[in-house]
Length: 250
Length: 251
Image (cartoon, rainbow over all chains, first blue to last red; front, side, top):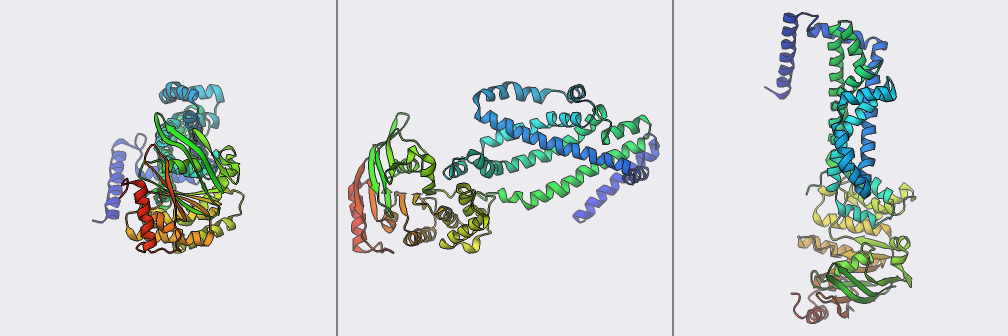
């Protein structure tokens, strides 16, 4: 059996098992694939509902980018400013890593009110440790000889950072982003459920309140589809097209 | 003209250089020659402003280079012992990199034009869009040379550029590329090596250093037209003089 045939068989078995559960447990408890698909069509054909996909997607991208930018600044500062390094290692990193997501979400409502600010804040605080730990370790192993080569050409440290250090960190930033993205999506749903009146998380909450289990399934299915498609069309393509350049072949 | 005077450098308790002085005339190809670990690379790193000497000065046309670092750096290009190529950039991108770093205001077509010319000089123009990992060791070193050439700096510092090469053909090709570059461009070159054959193949003058504590044992002129036949009597005589100066420190 070929690879695509095996994959197709796996999907078919999953759908069949799902269908079986749906028939046994009933549509109010476990909607089968056909009922879920009908609900998905209802969402994607209704502009008022589709906008919530965009809202959540936008919050995820914003949150991940803010986490990355914040982590880059913090790690660079910690590497170069001795006093901040002590604070970072002893206080900032352990605290940020340990704060529970629910506590962050509840505090975000107090600080930012219901909406995008709170959801993005939840993503930033929870996802940033992924970048912090990877960048911290990554900076230890960057090729110092390349930095020296660049330093012999210019004294402009910002240019050296932009042209040499940042590209060297690209594989680390890429793998961290890949990992952060699916985590951020889950966090966005929790954040929207608790601290927002829009987005997929809020719509799942509304559907659950109205006992529309088919809509809960449909929104979850759409979220999964979003993550999988992003993984394939953004991450996999970037990896195939650009990341192989970073292999030294040594 | 470069005038090095009283260069002294220690790393902790280890004194590497002690009161080293020598001069290099404009457009001269001078080799700093000595046994491994004698401090040749330290001298070159000081000349490249990558190390600060404990004492001493480097005067370029009478101006203290190390005191006016930004102006001084612009006069220098370096060919490193290992190629130090950016793995994510193509061959052309790596050569263009030196210009992007040193002259950020240079228009892109000029950057690419000069990078292409430098690649042409080292015979790698057909490999412009190749990534470093797809090149042989010798080709990577020629990109290293092209990156320095593209800068068109007054002074070229070369730190044992053949040391990382294993293949004899790669070494011959790189020696050929350096010799023809010098014939064409007539830069002031300071070349560091512990290989007698490299020194006599390329240099106008060879400054011979002792093992630690490092001091200058002598200077030899190589008044032989290039390309040089290493088996000719004149060249063999110079090789023997170098060996005599070192008194058995090298083979």
